[in-house]
Length: 371
Image (tube, rainbow, N blue to C red; front, side):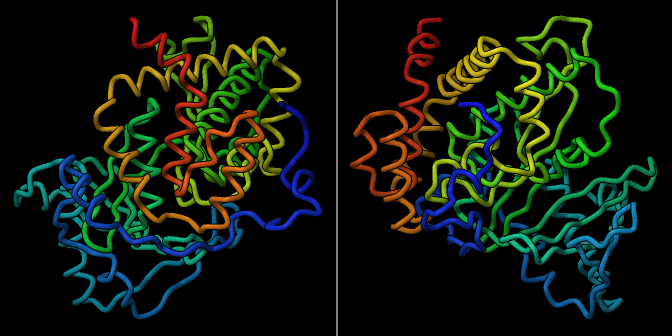
């Protein structure tokens, strides 16, 4: 399965060749909203997405190297900005589960508000300062998209990466996910030891499998981050080494695309450096072992959150979060991939995700349930 091929190689001559086209926003329906409210994700928010769109003008932003980015700094009228600051600070405190007291709100200030018209959700990025400590943090306000929120919740429940986010009406608020963007990590690579390259390779294999199991697409290198991992969390790596983990930061393409290959990070040309590390530093047995560790981890998470996860997946099964022709393509390709016909009856992307979890993790779920 591991090779140097990319998506362009795999889709040449086929229909639906261009992955990750701009997709529609899927509204949060009543059933999903009820789930979010029950688990504390749907709460009334002081700041909403619509409050941020009426800026006066915007300045394009460059990165630290002077290159233009997709981000722009939104500039507001002074009185409008003062009101925004109050509601944004209150929203941040709710996101971080801090009391809305005068003492708390007075500790923070909004440094800047940026937006990006490149992503599906057209996000606003808010930089907030803690005055006394001079520390800064970011959070994001986006248009609420049901498929994205399903992706966030699956990340929270199925991986070792808990994440804070809140929903209210047409607004989604997300915390900043720390880490070095995957493309920057490769660009700034130093003289890694063989041991470090091996650790990065194992992390990428695990990430690759995690994305495919939950059908999270578009995991190009700029849509995930790389972090070092405490040794106690590195299950497949000996102590005394630098360990790494990879986690997603963008969830727009949760079970939306039709092509199976778009759910494998290994096939994106942007990730070629990571694939090269896998091929050069891991034997077939080591790749398989890393895959099995990820499957076992996800199975344990399913056992731990069985009730909540079942409610989430059942909500997905009855939701409209993709296009019919993509559903037909994906279920046919997964039938072929697993040499089965179990996906044939799946009428929605949620139903495909439900069957996918069973298909890949059944053996590991049986093992985990006996422990």
